[in-house]
Image (cartoon, rainbow over all chains, first blue to last red):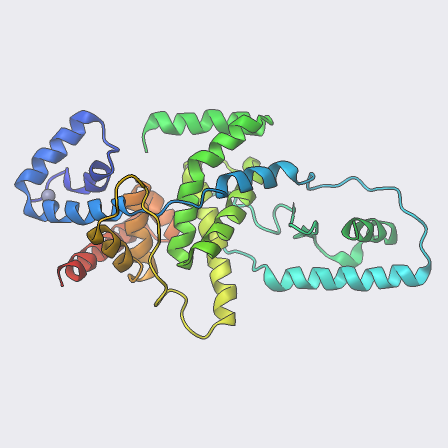
Amino acid sequence: MSSKSCPQLPDWVAGRLPSEEARAVAAHVDACAECAAEAGLLRALFAARPEAPRDLAPRVSAALRDNEPVVRRARRVRRWPGWAASAAAVMVLAAGAYWVGIRDAPDFSGLGQIPTEEGSAWISDDGIAAGAPVMDELSDDALLALLEEMGG
Amino acid sequence: MSQARRDDDETLLRGARAGDEGALDELIERHHGAAFRVALGILGNEADAADAGQEGLMRALRALSGFRGEASFRTWLLAIVANEARSVLRRTARRRETPLYADTPGPGRAADEEVALSAEAARARELLAKLPEKQRLAVQLRIDEGLSFREVGEIIRSSEGAARVNYYHGIRRLREWMEK
Ligand SMILES: [Zn+2]
């Protein structure tokens, strides 16, 4: 027996319906063997739904709070000898290649603007601005400032 | 999802965008469970799911200005988490020969720890993990999170109709397996 109550089963089982609608679904389930069987399965699934680890929310909160703003102000740059700047460039390029290698560009459509590595730079755990484009177009000064930050 | 709750999210979003850390924390508190479950539904193990859930939540909450209100905030957030989990899955799949999901154990803890998890409930959840991904996510998002089929479609990247079909195929299969 098909009714407008049938599609509401998951919400009924999970206690998400206002009481009047819940009563209507309950009455239907009493009369509909199909829905009674499905409700049994849904009840089992819902009872065992997994919960996030306890530390997940605090971890997200702390990480959002502690990280510096995405766009960092340039620090005063020490004068480094030329060979150091070259070494710095190699290291920064290697870091950039690492990120390009492990971060896939997600394919997304239909939901409006979804943040991606390209769309919004963000700072990873080790302080590298992931998604920062084209490392080799940075000026020497910017490169040095970045390296200085990476080195702590 | 009720209208009241959606309105609450909007109020919190306004607060979070204005720099209210309490509002941001409340958004995290509200949605981290769903974020974890979505990631778990895709990745099949809790450690990876926690990492992908965290990464997705952080990415979304750092980019609140990108949320235009075309979907519900939760759907938008969960789509970002799902995206993150899929990219983790692609990376790990390249490292491993065997499919990730096949024989990994089902999820662990019961939502309500006061009630001992019945064997039937645990078994239902183990079987859920064996469904094809779209069926698994459709069933999971509909029962665990109460998403509409349109919202489910936005996360599994399908039409509303296909989300509904995936849900009912998944339910039918689970009922067959449970009866065995
Ligand atoms: Zn029915």
